[in-house]
Length: 111
Image (tube, rainbow, N blue to C red):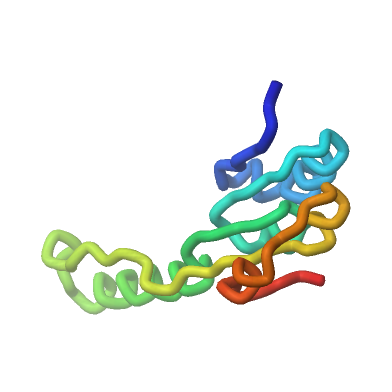
């Protein structure tokens, strides 16, 4: 029997993030993913790159290519901004105590 859930972010799971959060809570499963929008929708927590930052980074690449840069000459970049979000409403509903020290590391704590 599963004791926790890790959600893989994709187009379908992103669209259904609220339903996934509701189902995880209904089945008393702490759930985590790498996109903050899922924690905002009700998953217990998320830790991963800031999606808006990644889109801006991608737009910079598109701009360089449209101005004549060869894609093969552009460096591969990794995310530089990560977010850790904890949903305390979900933690309370699951009967979990999230240590204050862990909350202090979070970029956002949803009350």
